[in-house]
Length: 348
Image 1 (cartoon, helix red, strand yellow):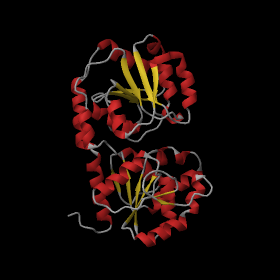
Image 2 (cartoon, rainbow, N blue to C red; image 1 turned 120 degrees about the vertical axis):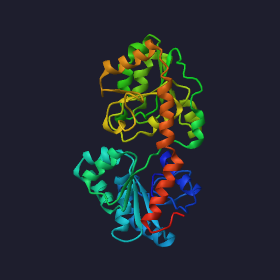
Image 3 (tube, helix red, strand yellow; image 1 turned 180 degrees about the horizontal axis):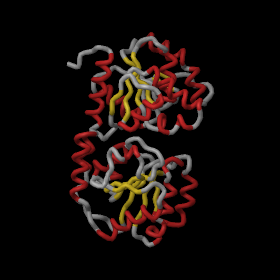
């Protein structure tokens, strides 16, 4: 497995592969707390270190003799895996994370070439939405592709709300990182008068490259906006479940994990109306708001406050939909089965 060791996606995937009986070697340019085999880290610049690690990955493959190389994020570790393997065994399973297909290739022809290099070599591509896989196929025809949700673990279904009554003021969580792509400052601007009037509170991530910028913006609203620190997965999901509304204004998304988590926990979801979100969110499951439309977003939130409708049936239906489509352990079992099929193993 080639992946950023500091990503919670990596930790979840790695742990579940092992829990379901796979023997896993995790190799990463980054350094972190998970058990890993370190790759080359000479420059501190990811793209350079990926290229410097090609020979190291080839040696690890010779030593470990994996059935499958599983690379995460096409334009980084996917590109590294493709260069290390070329046309040689073993098979390459590529796990897309979203921005590697939806954002990076639009930056330049060079950035696009990195993603295409990975897609071209991949024997099997996993993506968390049909939309993401379709967009990947536009860059290069995929040999095999499978929708695979990140979803939520079975144990956290128990955190689903016991009561759907709405808090006063309405408690809104904005759990996306403080990065430009997630557009969190727009949310503060759109809901400014509701914050000033004390009708809502906002809780958002206390980390990301734009944290100081949004903290400066939030200072005007006092305690109405709070920032939470990084938490363990269990603590974060329990914390999220205490809120009424999940809100995302992201400019780009595949099938956001946080949205699925919110639906599983019983929050009322609101998200920017972009294609990657629509596979989960519609008028029956939550609220889509036109992207960057302050008036529309404010109107949705104000209506939820004024109507005082807990949307009980919607929230119960959302839970059932998650159970059917996005239990993490089930998704991982399906991915493992597909990797076994890829190399001719029986799934018995």
